[in-house]
Image 1 (cartoon, rainbow, N blue to C red):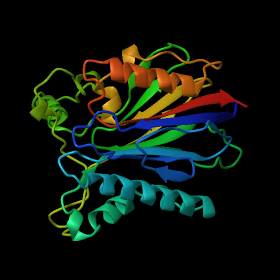
Image 2: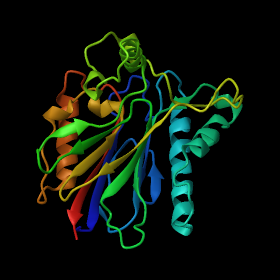
Image 3: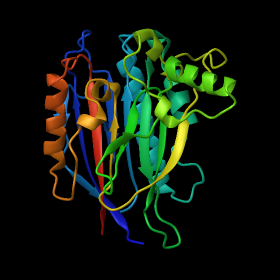
Image 4: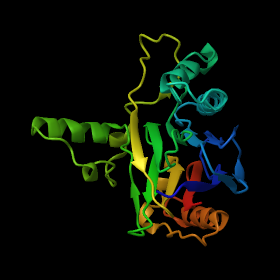
Length: 281
């Protein structure tokens, strides 16, 4: 099986957020960022890599502190892994939760989402054909198939609407179909988060949030987008451009930014997107 390298680029902007704050943060290959506006240089990774986004929930004016702490902790965990690739636990979500929960009391109630993608070092001459995806809240990961030439969401938001979908499926003695999740056009209270990273050092009142983890097999010329809701709430993935081996990743992200500003929502929220393309070596 062919070994896959990655080409990665990230974009973030404050947009027209009503609170005038940039509450998104992201981790990009080897460092974390929280910027009002920016697009990264393109990076290439032949082996292990890690990217992540965190969206500070806007109900608190301190949620940018929670999202930034989450990304600082991702950097620490990733560096720890790079220093000791043989460790059994890679990117332990409980450690991110603990770091955010125990921020100083003046930030009490601040909260943030998380979406994280990483690939560990290959072992025993195995190929780099799969990635690990972990997420909390409504930051998402999307997959572009080089075969079907289509984008699809592959993460389930942790919100009231999807909780009700699961409860209805359980009442019918069945497993919910993924197509039932992340529905659009519902009343805004239905999108209230049921799980996120929250600042509250009383861990009995602030238990470890539920998170999802999955292993995704990747093929040559497949792509991933890791993004906050300021992207996917305003421009649905079926409106995103396709990607091939010739696509300029910076230009693709700039076009997505134009679509967000031109959307009905007029970039009313912070937006961050990290684009990852997988290529045969």
